[in-house]
Length: 288
Image 1 (cartoon, rainbow, N blue to C red):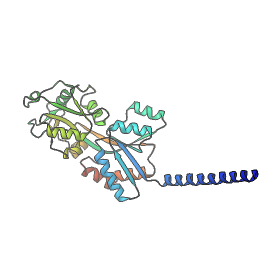
Image 2 (image 1 turned 30 degrees about the horizontal axis):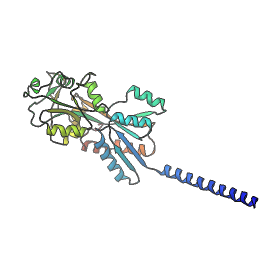
Image 3 (image 1 turned 135 degrees about the horizontal axis):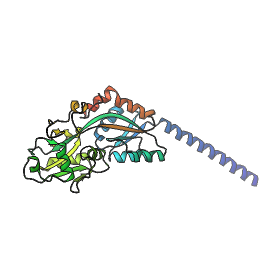
């Protein structure tokens, strides 16, 4: 009886081992066949990436792409922590982020996919017709507090900005504020769409948004002048590409290492004529 019990125990052990091996093989096959992509990051790029993802999935029904925002900094952190396949970013990775990635054996590979003009938006009832880079700096650093200082009515300026985890926030601070701090009175908004909504409803507000968002809400885009003597320039496809519009920047996708598998297939689609046509149709600027 004792020997029979031992034999039965050994038989059960062997059967369990085979079952576990079968499950492991099945799991590996499922992982190998997986065609899902997660993209996280720039709020400016959410609309663009969502539109590209929808077209990509229509082209290949076996592919699944999930797009979320949260800001470029959030996307970069997710890439470093291994919680997203692709990071969408409206700014370059900072050196400290590259160092952190290296410490976690992550190799960020940057790919430029489009350009963007940061549009300055006000309420349509605002009579101010144009603005200089210096005036923008003074508004956002708190030196200017009233529209009359820009030739407008005697009304206090409501100043709107993205939050600090936004790539647009960082880019605007570096290129418009010359790395000076935003004034404490600047209202930090959780998303670009929130800036559009606020400007639409607040007659005396001002904000900055990615060019693709200017089609939303009831806002007026005003020309920007490099200096007092320069002409005012509107953000357009031509002025962004020829760099005559002073607040323009590239938009990036970041990968951990050279893109492979579904990641590469998606990137190839974004860079293709079909993908670049979507870039243009959604209000962003193509690479050429």
